[in-house]
Image (cartoon, rainbow, N blue to C red; front, side, top):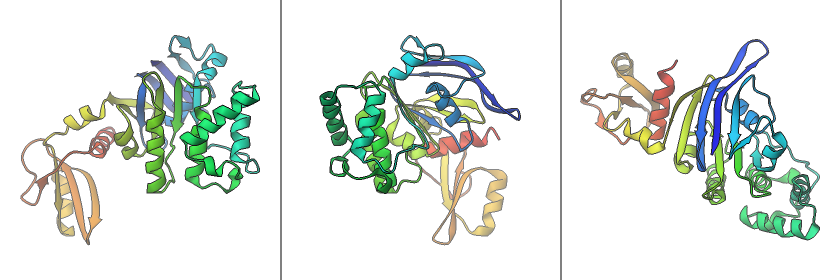
Length: 291
């Protein structure tokens, strides 16, 4: 269990990145969902012992993370948003170097470890290639491989699928799912709602440095049961709908706006039909209520 209490951070210029954040993160995949600039990366850097908070505490399986950074780092696997690589090294050389940094000194032990990691992330055929020529998806898979070195108790992945194409995103989802066991805490920090809905058993929503909600995805959907409606509308009717209804999204489809609204009472108008709520509906409704 990862326990975060009262975590606060203010940057120069009185920019409050975190405002007394409290979180209890159980084993399994935990989604930290929020827009860009919401404080996700600041929170992840503090948990990863790369940034000092102004106040608060962090405990991981009984270890005070802020006071015992060396011990905390030995139980940590981290894939940051910007994962730097030496472009002239091969993938094999990169993992060998990372394994040494994590204290795997015996050559035979490193070899067996690296072989297993390449199998897990499906990069065995590319192990001799220089990482400077890797695609974004290959870089992220290599990033997960280095994060798994040492069988960490806590794995942090920060915006791991941003910029990936749909095929690589799906592959990365599968890889993350396989990395989870019953004891490991995995924090997935992202602004992509589908990452959380596809992977996470628990989640929190953060905005402007504050936790707005913590729940399980199915609990979030239960809150919107029988409340989401959708209609294809002529453009001249959209403004009137926005004036009287809580519009959560409006997208063009076939030349007409497709409007989704939340109405916990009656049908908004005869054009609307009930639809199954999604986690994106919950997220957009929640963050719009705190503007």
